[in-house]
Length: 430
Image 1 (tube, rainbow, N blue to C red):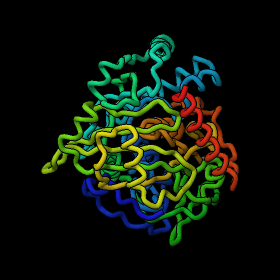
Image 2 (cartoon, helix red, strand yellow):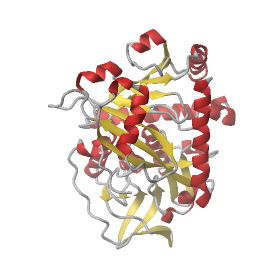
Image 3 (cartoon, rainbow, N blue to C red):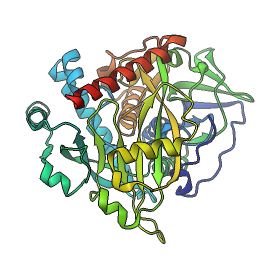
């Protein structure tokens, strides 16, 4: 996939290029992948006094971590009721609490490090495309009763003051999460890692991982690393050198577009600063971006269309604009400023893969669909495990490495997404 010409790239903070690995070199811990999982893991370990080397095949946050919608919200890609049915309420409660701890850790870093260019904005609205107020009330009450988590029902009259579209009938308001500039957050973490003495090597793809005596050996095209501990954090762009982890995850694409500045037209469609998403299983997510100096109003970020196809539509901006107009006809004629795709890593169980793989080897990956909160907490749990502080990573033991289906995996995933879209259509048609 070509390099990503996204709105985030155009509005990124200054960041220095990092040289490729030149060695051989030794490290206490080597982290593979400089997305939000790898960056968070390196930072957690450095704060615990470990010597850390971070290897990245491209540039910091090249993959999904620097391309996503920028939502930092509680939960996982797998629905909470499915977790409860599979694990029981106590364990589902513990996992949900961890997802909220991930949100809190990102918020804490923003405040603690005074990261620039991130513009965190609080709030989320989950928009219902069917008029089922009783179902929304039951969901609100279930979250409050079983998970001690408060959300608020927004009925049609109030919602019309926030979002002007006949497609949306009601919403649940959640004030716990926020949205922000994900690439600038990752670049800010990278700067803090280097300030603490961590080393980051870009353009240093791992081509082989094996053992040499009591250490783990990682080879790149031109050098090698010996490390006592290795954490595999590669995402949708990770290669076969990651072995079992690579064979257990699938690269899944999603599409994102940012419009031109909307001027006064923005208020004809959206009058909320919250992160917005609909309640379909394969739905849209969108948000108004903070205004930039000198521009005529705010831009709209619009995303969706999860797919196992790596190649986006030939005219992705036009494709996304048609999708936008289907919900907001009043924005007909608005132009796209940029549009892009990105690959996330999903496991078949739709949960992160977190924990040990063998002596000195750890995994912290498969955060597709909810990575901006779950990757940071996964990184913390792995750091705690490496440093002997806790075994909280065991909460993820039921979600281990399962074969991704090999060449048939993308076909099965695409069939699943088609079935979800058909279920959404049938639900709305009824």
